[in-house]
Length: 427
Image (cartoon, rainbow, N blue to C red; front, side):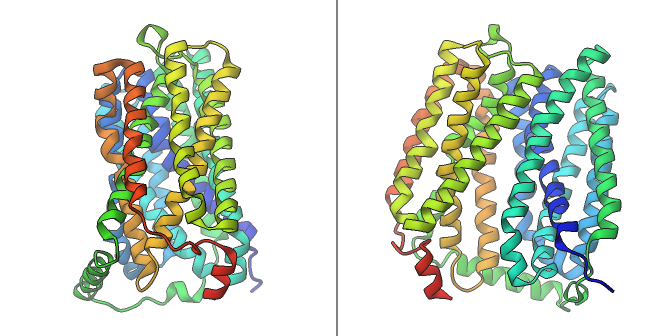
C-alpha cells in the first residue's frame, strides 16, 4: 500500500485542533455578550472551561493505554461535532445558557483529549525528519484555524444577524456550520489518517502501574532545582494577560455607554480575530528567532517588557474611546505582537524546566500550570471590571505586571539554553 503524504493529514489535523479551542475560549465570549450575559458571568463560566486543559495530564496515560491515538482523534472529532451541534440546538431555546454551557463542557473535554492524541499521533505517524519539517506547518494551520474561527465565523455571525434579524438564530447557524465542518473532518480523517504499526501496539499496564508512574513523575517534578520559583513563574508570569484576555475582548464589543468601543461582530473579527492573530504570530516567530540566536537568558528581560508594556494600549483605548478602526487595529496589533514576543520566553522556560528524565510528562505538568495561570485570574476578571469600570480595570492590569517582573527576577537560567550551538552540543 502506498504511503500517504503527511500533507494529506497534518494541516487538517491541526486545523481541527485549533477550531474547538477558539470556540470554547473566544467565540463563547462574544456570543454570550451578544445574548445579554454580564461580564461577571461570562468570565466566570468561560474561565472554568480551562479546567480540562489543567487536568489533562491526569488522563493522558489512559489515552495511551485504552485505544490507539488514531481512534481517539476521530472519535473526539465526532464528539466535538456533536457538541457544536448541541450548542447550536440549545441557543434558540429557553434553557440556552445551561444547555450551551453543558455542550461547551463536552467540547472542552473532547478538545483537550484530541490535543493529547493528535500530538502523540504526530510523533508516531512521521519520522524524525518529517516531524521537524512539519512543525512549522502544524503551527501555521493552528493559526489559520484561529483566524477562521475568531475572525471569519464571528464576522459571519454579525452578517447573519442582519439577514435573520435574530441574534440567537445567527449564532445558532454559525455553530451548525461548525458542526458540519467537524463531521466532514471526522469523515475525512477516518480515511486520511495513516495507521502506524506503533499506534496499534498497546503497552500492557495496569491502572496501579500507571498511577505509580504518575506518582514518580510528580515527585521528580517537585524535586527539580528552583521548583518554588519555577511554579511561581508559571502561575504569575501571565497574570496580567490572564486578567486582560477575556475582558479585552468584551471591551471591544461592549456598548460605548458601558465604556466599551462598540465594535460590531464583523469589526471584532477583523480587529481581534485577524489583525490581532497576525500580530501574535509574528511576535512569536520573532521571539523564537531571537532566542535561537542569543539564548533565552539574553532575551528574557526584553521579552518581559514586551509582554507587559503593550498592555498600556488598553488604558489608552479605554480613556480615549477612538472610533477610528485603523487606530484600534494598530493598538491591538501592538499588544498582540508584544504578547507573542514575550510569550516565547514563557514557552521556552517550560521546555527548560522540563529537561531531564520524564521530560515529556514534566512538560505536560508545566502546561497544566500554564492553563491554570489563565483560568484563575479569568474567574474574577469580569466581576472586578464591573466593580471598577474598564478604565480602572486596565490600570489594575498594568499594576499586576509587577508580579511578572518579580517572579522573573528570581529565575536562574543557563546562558547557553536556546542557542543553536548549545542544542548541537546536546545532540
